[in-house]
Amino acid sequence: MHVQLIGFMCTGKSRIGRELAPLLGLPFHDLDRVVENRVGPIKPFFERQGEEAFRAVETEVLHELLAGPPGVISMGGGTPCEGDNLQRMKAAGTVVWLDVPLDVLMSRVERAGGDRPLLAGLKGGALRERVEALLAPRLPFYAQAHIRIEAVGGPEDIAVRIAEALQAR
Image 1 (cartoon, rainbow, N blue to C red):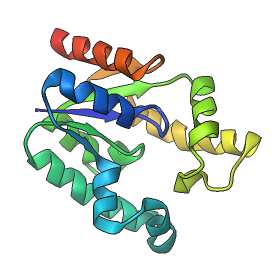
Image 2 (image 1 turned 90 degrees about the vertical axis):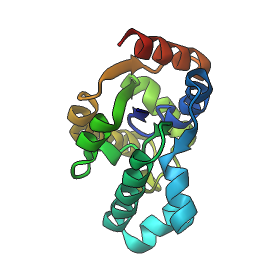
Image 3 (image 1 turned 135 degrees about the horizontal axis):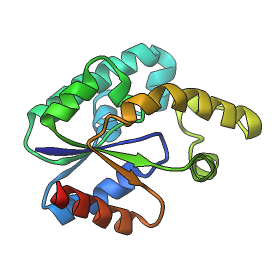
Image 4 (image 1 turned 120 degrees about the vertical axis):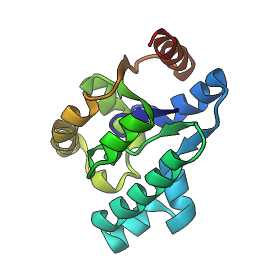
């Protein structure tokens, strides 16, 4: 069974996934990196082809990963919100929501979110408004995860907490 990390951009899904996989003795897959292996860098692809084309490739790659051997998979922020992705993810293993309080999330987005196609060129109040507008419709999807972890602290600590929560299931 797969362990799938979901949450908004900059919640640490990739870093935490890399820490979690060895704790569980599973390989790690970053959905965005697998998509990039197929189409090249995401931002230019997104700008050229549009969000719909990106989501189609993302969903195709997701289905391939879920059909493969068990692993830890870090998802894109919007992955569980597309089509039947969340239902497929839940059927394929345990979905873990990395929940980060908005103020903490904003400091991360301001520091590291500039390369995200959905946030391109935004700063200050406009950036916060965009994050809130993107986050609001995603929260009901994230809330359907099997496990919710407040992803505040170091990636190693969060990975340990996830491993403990998985063991307790």
